[in-house]
Amino acid sequence: MDKNQNAMIMPKKLRKVSSSYLNKLKMMNKSLNENYEALLKVVAVDKEEEAIVILREVDAQLQKLKTLLEKERMKESTHPKL
Image (cartoon, rainbow, N blue to C red; front, top):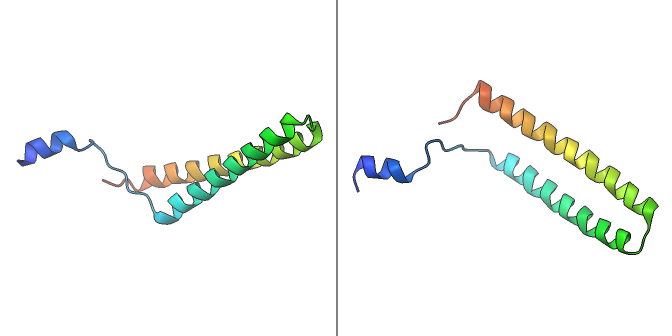
């Protein structure tokens, strides 16, 4: 396979991210999944107060995720990786 054929197969832009960033995303995903499961359980038995507490925790986690993604986007824009 020559150089031009290889270029057609590869995506135009590959983005390398740090392992710590990936680990943070994995931990947030795991935590959100756990809260989702807990939310399903409390909603199934109609425990509104517990559901509200879980939803507030999920909201806080989503805000942290948003902040993390914004920081990563800012790093990307100031130091683009090829």
